[in-house]
Image 1 (cartoon, helix red, strand yellow):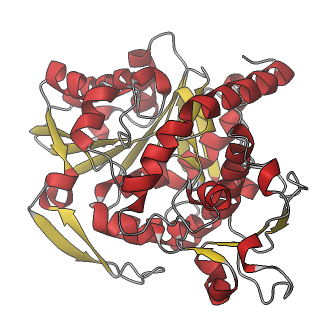
Image 2 (image 1 turned 135 degrees about the horizontal axis):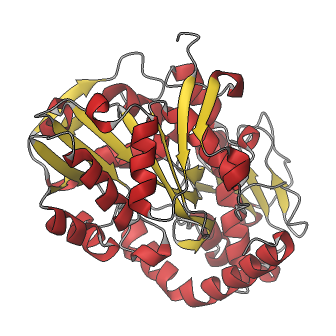
Length: 425
């Protein structure tokens, strides 16, 4: 990388369209950013079938504003493309999120990457996980421009989701599943080696705090952020909502992979300053591991993904009234040289692939990280629920739906307490 500073543009205008236009102008103007007569792929976040007000998916009005800005450059084609989360139907996600209607209104193409059959195998040079190659749609690889359009939100698998994580939605389910069975941050970087967005526009209009992506708590911030550097985009996005980036492991991974900078001295924020738009957001995934004294939590050397999942699942146990009933359990996350010898098998939960060497000692949940609800379900059920062989769809999702009302009530109460304390909602 050169010593040239990464530029991050931040806009907060009265209208979404004005903010999007401002960001493009700050980055050099759309006609200088995009070639004429080009194919432009816009990759929003539409991973789950949730309505716009939930802030689980990219705000459809932000997408509309970006499409209208792109049209000024006279492209040949504009394609909106996504591969929804494992077990989710992309077309349904497009429809429920409001993205389908925007595509129809604006006369642009809408493609479900999961259904695409014209795939090209792309080798991953110098891969860091076991993702040696990925199959990607031809249209994505042949497009002159890819605009990465994530929404900023809390996310159990990575603490938060932004520009870097959003590109995970360019692969089909097999690769997606493989990514979650190993070091997810490393696997994300490997996908970035294969397909790189050249522009990142982050939706921070109503970012989702709380226990996202399934139980979000939207917060109005009113910003649009843009950068050619996805790492800098994510770093400044976190600064805007008060996420401590020192506690998010994958920034270092991304910087080491060469995708951008985490050195704030090498980032220039233009437009609105961070201080002008700062709004503290509730991200309960960040915090110490001593918040559950009724359990023996062995979390040394654990990554932020497993720490985030631990937070989510321990609180879910409280919400469904299973926390006290199962007190005394030992939960192990992260790589360990040894664990106590005197823990009964039924009292030991081993969460994630780092604990595999001890799998015969207790209830081992596979994954790096494991599927989001597996820890609380394993503890409450007294048997392993690991999301393999269709369990995530056949058991986990219906169980999550059953637990959802009481969990939502619990989260709403916690959010109210947080924002009352911080005075910004």
